[in-house]
Amino acid sequence: MIGIATTIFWAFLIIFSISAAYSVKDFQFDFGDPQMSIALDNKLLFSLPIHIQNRGLYNLGSFNVTTDISDANGSPIAHGSTFVQTIRKGERVTVFHNVTMDINDVIQNSSSYLFSDSQLNIAESVGMSLAELIPVQASANLSYPWGAPLYNFALGAPAYEPYNITHIKVTVPISFENHAFFDLAGDLQINMYNSQDLSLGAGTATINAPQHSPYSGNIELYIAMTPQATPSGYFELTLHAQYFNYGPWVILYG
Amino acid sequence: MANERKSGLKASLRKYTGKALKATIKGVLFYAVYFVLWMFVAPFATMIPGLQQSIETFVAIYITLMVIGELMAGTIYQYFFGAGKAMFVILYLMLSLKGGIMGMTIENINLLIDLRLFLAIAMLLSLLGLAKSVLQAINYVNDKAELTLT
Image (cartoon, each protein chain N blue to C red):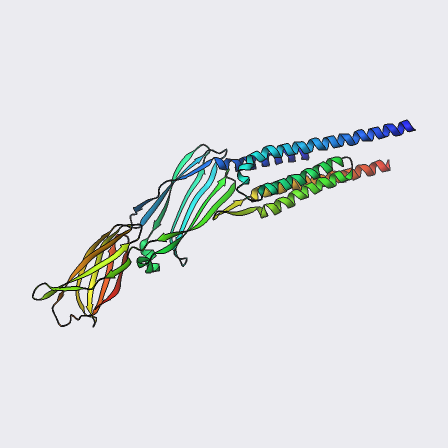
């Protein structure tokens, strides 16, 4: 009797294991085009549609996708997780794997992300339970190129021209390349200081640089015609963009 | 006297032929089952290096132990080989499944399969087979002892 029972259990175990493994080839995963949008809190929202078709013999359980994005030093930048309790056999499911990224956090970690191209580390993991009993997990570490939104940012030599009897108009050329995967739109505020740290004047320029394109423009400010206007000093810049704020940072002139 | 010896030889030849035939049928049947099941596993065998070799080694040793066990039917050694077969399954599963959590890397992707539940059930079934062989061996020795006494 024990022999028969053992044989039956063995047969059941082997057939179940092999059919569960065989069902793997009948699972179909398709990844749609990733979409980028702006979340309510002005964060970047990446959304990856995943179409799952279960043509296997068993249900799929605990399907989960996890994405962890970190910078080159390993500091976490973004995290996203998607979980589906059960995908029944014969069922087709579309889930959206969302990852929200706060560009402010990236820049807070290191301002070099604003001016220099770099790499982001992405840890991707997909897990599921075959036949709701056998947990399987696949993971991969990828590196994603990070394009700096203000790559090669430079201010040209300021050009001075008389505006009226009391003021001088100062025109400062701005140039940079937006290597980022998002459009850069916002206001760049500039404060001009002389070599004795006295404020001479301020101006604002509206910047609009589409992704992967160079930008060049001018920012104008008006300074009083006083002896305090020295030929050398520094500019203090502050950027208020759609996805992040940065500044002030200092660039010398003269 | 010569006739008696002749018929004794005939009987034991028939006995051993029967055993060999039974062992052959069992071995062929087992291999046929393996062959059919392998067709379902074959698509994954190319993805997991060493899987085919590992399963083939297991099947070859298991069939050998099974055939020897059958040939030894009617002796105490049959149960020894039965117990050996059960222990072999336990050890082989433990070693080849690496404790139930199998990890492998396929083109920069780390794959982790948790087979602990499968391993636990297989272990329990093998232990049951081991216990069965031990009990059968005890029963066999017991029967022999009773025959000697009477």
